[in-house]
Length: 208
Ligand SMILES: Nc1ncnc2c1ncn2[C@@H]1O[C@H](COP(=O)(O)OP(=O)(O)OP(=O)(O)O)[C@@H](O)[C@H]1O
Image (tube, rainbow, N blue to C red; front, side, top):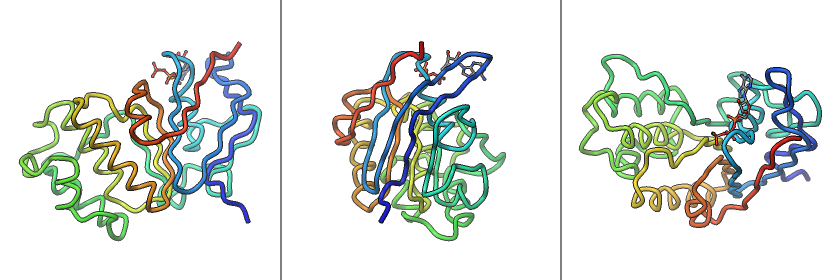
């Protein structure tokens, strides 16, 4: 029986006429957290986008949940991606954004109150997201990904804007997600976060 959630072999991605990724291998099974590290520009975000079906590899083979990743509704029911700040709905509060995530996905992994507590947003729940600080908005982005059911989280620099105390707390949130059988691939510069999550570290080297 196949147990891998992600299987990427010999992946090459070309952007702007040059290879950004070349010969990249990555696997992850249920309950595993993988931290993808490497210097600025080495291709971490590109790899995540490739796993999300948003870039096609020009060589190699990628399977996510037993099929090539595809930007389809069925794929996004199983996979949550965070990276660039999402567009927030005008006139909707933090709480309403979380309620929306639960209703769109037919139920939550967490209740809205649990998510507000886990991401320390209880006192900001009635504000519009743009009234939050940068780090608080990052916590909301992560809460939107974790409140809904999924089998795979693709997180691009989840530590962005977070203070040290919340980074430690995030490690606990991700460990719990993995303990429930979910897989996490995160691009990160934060080796401490990766260590606290018990993540397997994969360091990308510049494609030559
Ligand atoms: N659309 C694009 N067209 C051309 N080149 C691109 C495009 N997107 C990214 N690149 C290039 O691909 C390389 C990898 O970018 P990527 O964002 O994946 O790096 P990264 O490892 O995530 O970097 P960082 O740590 O700074 O976030 C960079 O040199 C970037 O300039």
